[in-house]
Length: 149
Length: 125
Ligand code: HEM
Ligand code: HEM
Image (cartoon, rainbow over all chains, first blue to last red; front, side, top):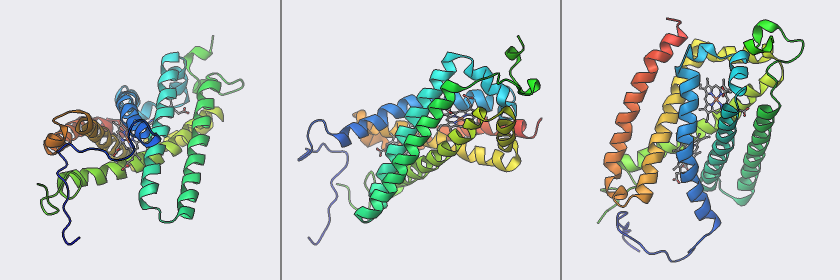
């Protein structure tokens, strides 16, 4: 091999191995499917929380209480949480595979990654489902207005 | 025929740099998201705890960080859509370079819309 020739990326090529459905192909497909959904979810999230009203200045406990009073935003945030962490986690897995030399280091880094993703998904899910907008004994002025009734 | 000198989709030029930026922005957003779920979890501690920590998001230093975060998200999302077109649209690979400049233009337009409004929120105008 004296010269290296790189095939033209715009021509069709034939696969030689890994035909059909396999885990890396599913992971590739998932990155694209989840990416398209995340565009809507994350842009909507940023639009409501950073653009509308007073933007970031308007965010406090009462703001979150108001949003999560509606199942619509609960489902929205739940989807964003799961898809965001699985998409991001899967992406970081690729990055670790690319740069971490040696099986030991790669195992350690992926172990840490999976641990962080699982703990964060569980925590975020619990927070959405166990959230109480009107905790007893809390300072009333900090709560959403519907708590008075 | 592509050569190492003229570049391919992934070596040199727009194709490679958009890949580098996609990777770095994705990594940053992921790290932010881990912290962000933790700060949101404070709503389960107390209204005071949540308001105290989220208050940091309203300072100037964080405000500039949010500009960076939004910039990273917008780039990653737009370029992600470009990648999907490269993979699924028959014309995608041939048009990847012009689509890259499309991403840059849409990014600039969206940032130009976001920035003034965010600064106004931050400085309370
Ligand atoms: C600086 C920009 C951001 C601000 C000010 C912000 C603010 C908030 C607020 C106030 C909440 C509470 C619930 C709600 O409002 O829906 C929340 C939750 C959430 N945000 Fe953001 N956010 C930002 C960026 C992002 C980004 C870029 C992502 C995705 C990558 C994201 C993902 C989430 C998720 C998944 C939840 C639900 C957390 C949980 O289940 O406990 N946020 N965010
Ligand atoms: C907003 C909509 C989004 C779109 C359209 C999108 C699209 C994509 C696509 C298509 C890929 C695959 C690239 C490849 O196979 O070479 C990818 C990779 C990646 N994404 Fe996203 N993404 C989005 C949001 C996010 C979010 C919220 C995070 C972080 C939590 C994230 C983190 C990553 C990472 C770390 C990679 C791996 C990069 C690499 O391998 O170089 N993305 N994204």
